[in-house]
Each structure stands twice: as C-alpha cells, then as structure tokens.
Image (cartoon, rainbow, N blue to C red; front, side, top):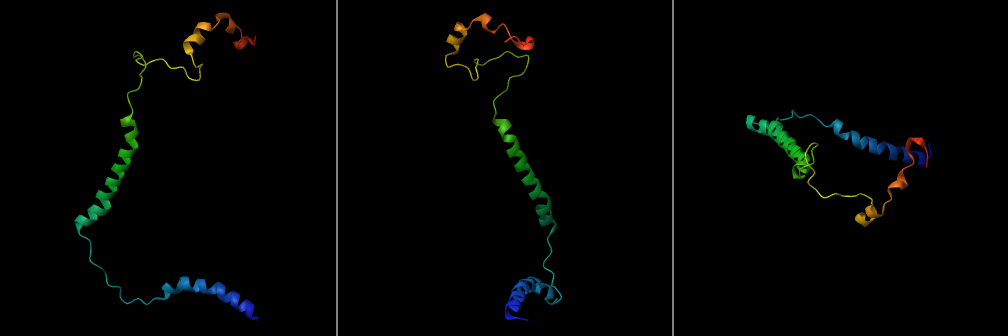
Length: 111
C-alpha cells in the first residue's frame, strides 16, 4: 500500500480513536459523592423551576399591564378623532369635498 493512502487512513482513523478513548477507561469502583439533602433537592427541582416559570410569566404579561385602557364597545369615545393616511389638512379636505363625486360605483360597477 502506498504511503499516501496509509497517511490518509491514519488521518481518518485517529479522530475516531480519539473520540473512543474514554470508553476504554478502567472502572476503579467509582466512589459516590455526598448525597443532596431534601432541602437542596426541593430547591433545585421545585423552587428554581417554579421561579423561572414565574419570571417568564411576569415578563410575558408585562406589556399588557403597561398598556393604557382600551376602548370597549358601548362606552363613549373619549379621544380626539384620527384620520389615517388622509390629507395633511383634514378640515379643508372635508369642506372641499363634493357629495355627488362619489355617488357612483359599488356593486353596480358604474365607475
């Protein structure tokens, strides 16, 4: 086998061997660590997840808490009128409008 092919195979196999080396470690009896107390278990598995949930719930409801009151149907409108995408001077445009100019159209297709 030529040297180039051997080097390429070695280059391909070395990373695979490096990944598999920990699997060949000897088990020396594995000394267990100190166990967690009941308080720490409750803290880690109950208190912290509930706290994270409450923080996320608070931040998700915060925009609606900061919003001012909305208009509800049946109540009187308490704000100034607003014309979206209209002319710059709305009062002059309403005064200059001709009532007969928009009498045609609609479903009859008379444009």
